[in-house]
Image 1 (cartoon, rainbow, N blue to C red):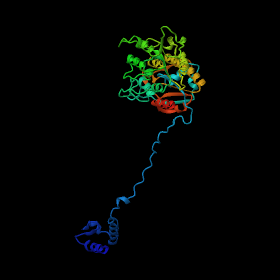
Image 2: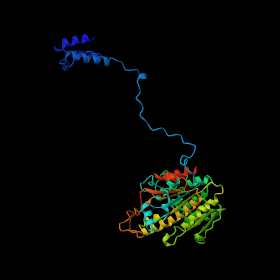
Image 3: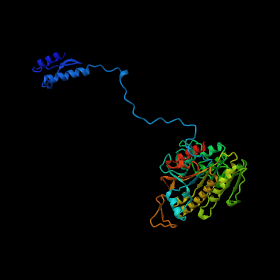
Image 4: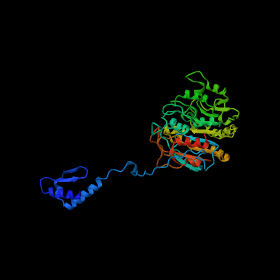
Length: 425
């Protein structure tokens, strides 16, 4: 075959017709540049071409597959045991404390205005959470509290519902279903966004009378907060929810006839104390019940825990947020210090008890608050960038068994996830 090709090449390259042999197509016309090549070199090239192109494709079943690229190992099957607490003691009780609107600057201003110290300094574990909601980088209290209570990102204004306004189960409801005593304490109305998000399921946070009615659907052992009007003098109907609660094994008292300092609830019934007709006064104007309530609440729930299962308690320092909205440093500072005093009472209980996890955080920062140059200890020159919330990362403080799991940076929904798993719910 090669001799025939050489003969054809020698015979035809000098004439007008250029012929070469293609192993796949037979005799074909050759382009002129081939005829200028050395015949021997060209013969060698043609021979190699014949060898390489005349081999048929390898059968599919003999083709070696390309090695798979390395991939991350598949997630392991969920173990039966609690993965968060394998190496640590499980908390029996969890107390979640929420300083509404309390960012790092609010904490700093409170600390510098309180002799350069706060009870928050006693917490060994600190983390940060991402506060944004499902529809806005800047969350509101309703979506922020629902992230804590139910572990979902939802829209601003949502109370215990998802983005489709469908109810979602909360950590308080899970605790109730498991037989744990539960409690809510706030220095705002008990129907306000943060406490409401643990009990109610409503499309909009300002539907206060609808939210109040949801308290009849739960069995929260302890309730302390304002909003008597939404229970007893309603615009939407003639119901007296306080009377209805009394028929459901509640003792219901209010600021009208009982001072918080004189409250001594028995533990044979649920207890509801209404602190104001609508919203309580600021601390600077005489409201003073948060600290004694924070001291009494864990003790009450512990006594209610007749099955020794533990309890869940949420305590909110609500009006730090309102100081931020008002752009008033003094308002913020006085509310932070009162909230920190309440934290001190809870820490005292946790230290003595030894089985209580205390978590302190905020739903968001309010006001874009800054401490300006020229400020001094006990004399804060504050400035604000907004009269609304901001999207700052929010600190999380943890103390007690399981606290180590709250270090790091994570979504605000992770606080629900961690509490749920640590509780074994």
